[in-house]
Amino acid sequence: MVNKINLEQEIEKITDNSVEEIFPTISCIIHNEKDDINIDQLLHVDVVRDFQKALTDTITLEFLLPLGTYVNELHKHKNKLEASLCFKKNFKQSCRRYKAIILNADKAAVSSKMQSVGTDELNKTNFVNTQIQLIPIELITLKKLKHEGIYRNVTPLEVVKYSILYELSKLKLYGTPFKLNLNIYKPEYHNKYENIIIPTGTKIGKIPNFIQHKYGYYNFDSNLYIQLDNNIKKNMFIWLYPTIDFDRVKKDQNIGMLYNTVKKGTNSNEKSYWLNNHQLKLVTDDVKITGDNNNELLNKGKGISFQSVTKNLKDINYDFKNDKDDYSVDENVLTTIDDDGMDDTTYVGLTDNTNLLTSAINNNRVAYIQTVIYNFTGLWEKEPLDQLIYPGMPFYYIYNSTIDGINKIMKLPGTILQQHINYNIKQKTMSSALLLGVKKPNIKD
Image (cartoon, rainbow, N blue to C red; front, top):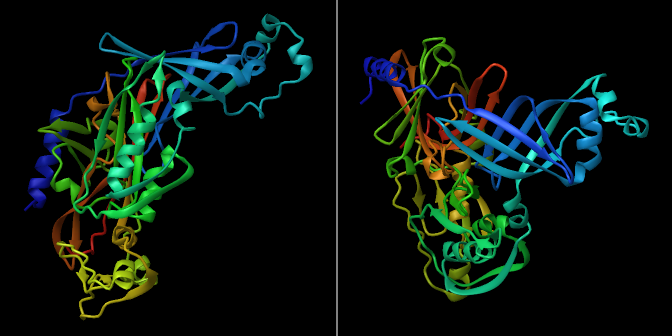
């Protein structure tokens, strides 16, 4: 049991033992069809990692360019730009080449008259604040990959795994196939289907969610996330996981723990993270919580009733097995029970996809935690397996609460949903905005 004194001591350990993350040297070169343009005034690098909905990291650069260079070297070639982004830290450098897209190309006033003026002459007049988005060249083809098929007597997860590996094995880097590293979180239950059908033209990135909603394999929504190592070693890392999970934090070795401290200034003035025994411990004094009330449960109900397709068609008993104390399952009813012994269910019709039904209930049991950790990114230096925060990573949110006049330390399980990393090049500062999905504090274990 964690008490107030132990919580304060744990926070002191984190702030006393943190190892300061070194700010990297970041450089960028833009490539058009003819020339390479060195970016001398790089302002910001943003890395958005949406583990709920995105397929991979979204990288955005902000920099200043002399007007002439922007008009004649970038804007004129805006549909055929590439960029090399390099990070150097601890005498190690990693670089990757990307497709570059100008985000504010239409906002910049580039007239035909400007394009007729020489670059050097225009460079004397002004600078243009430019934003570009970077897309890994290797993943451009991936987003276009499609898959279809009919699979018999298999589990949904087997179909997802096969279709992903089959299509990704076709990808090549400079003529050589990628080495695929698959990281799949295995569900507790595996229901086999006689037939699983993937319609013609289904994009590979949409297959996990299609199978989840049609057949089901996780008790929460699922996501597919793909990362490449920073040095070009032809390694591709593939993550498949439930976007939120209340139980995974008790099973995984590498977990995160976010401590909310009442001591102001922790984020900006002290070291705020520590990696200890496979546990990433973060400290913050600035947390925003949303969705921590019962409005969703009151509006949508706490349970779901349904008719089993299997039972109706084959006249056999339907048995949904769930060993969690949270649920009461009576044949075709999946629900949580109120303190007064009454259930509050909504009828959804015919289905055998109890994973999707459980996901619908679980989504109403989630609170969202937002915070910013300064001087921390947790990114890898060599490959994604080195990163401190990874897709689907389980987390605890730990804080001090007073309930009915009694002081209590709350420890809410959940997972990381998003990470937004910002490098401020001029100020040499970096930060990570985090979004966690955790179990609501008033939901019983």
